[in-house]
Length: 485
Image (cartoon, rainbow, N blue to C red; front, side, top):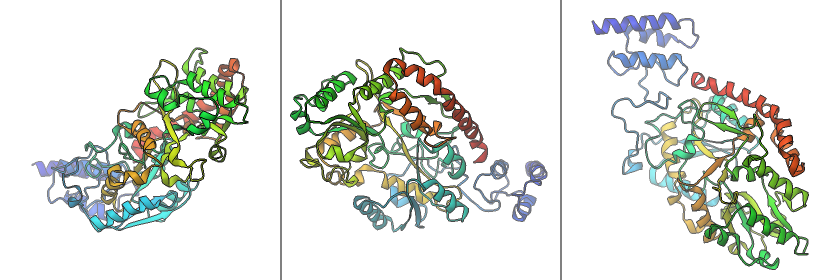
């Protein structure tokens, strides 16, 4: 009786889906006998499997396939954590295809070679540029050569997830394993689906968090005796003490610049603020009513003050390396020896120091971050291989720490900003604002910085509609993702 009922259910499913072009002749023949998932039995699982197929998940009818593509899949006794002897349980030794936006550093290549030696798995890599990364990914998928491993960040995740990424299978990526940094992963979780993984203390996940670099010898030249990192350890590192250092450097009579900053929104994020917030499914606006007294406005006023006093410049590693900049706020990639940022710095990079980004006085200071996650492309042939490769490639313990960072002080600061408990402000605003029009975010933030401090709130308010229009478009895209995938 049970089998007859299930056959009827499946027949109804067939009748409903006959209009869908995606039902192949193979699907029809398998439905006639009821064993849709080819597990040797006709059960309620066949109904669920058919529903996944109709919804567009990456499953094949009549083929036993554990990769159903959903975040909540956990059929049978398949574990959602890695075994103690992780790499002895590799599901296959097929080649893993990685899409990169740059060449591997020598240190990364050593880790990849070690993984191949350990597992026998070969790593194929397609190299593109940062600017062309998403376009190349779409092209590879279109040409039926999708990569198993892809990277994305908070600037691109909503668009790339809809077009190019497969939601991670809980059993394939062992999503309950404590190795993963769920704080980072949750920041780009969409409608209950994880699309990427991260690990704590990983140079390939947290190198887009922000820190402030400085050369102690330059600061001493300008009459500064207490270094920023010492102020940090004493609980005195904040916007006020940072402003004092910037002013001393600028006014030392040497023609030096007080601050070079990679992204002017770092002040806003150091206060834990952004133009938008994200709840795992939709973005909401934080600027519907712009309050003069808010930390968001105060943060931009700090930048406007620095601009009015000609105390800062935008990104300029050359000026910093020449010893003509007091503080340099930029992402943590510069902490890495293989970044090459400070190879020619005055006095050598071994003497440089860094400190977490300063925040408002007597308040929590947040580390601004553009999270990097690693996932797998739609229709990728080897997501299982991707999961095990990323477990190894992202693991900081597989890297010789003495070879990773420019010096031990840099390593200490990286540990502070990349731990699971680090307070971070995810930099969503740029990706949302630029969704309709590229560089709109820079246009708006430049206008805010150029304003008088007293007029900052008015400039934000005058430009909020451009941000809100993009936000609405992004939300429409996000709402479709559970259906698309």
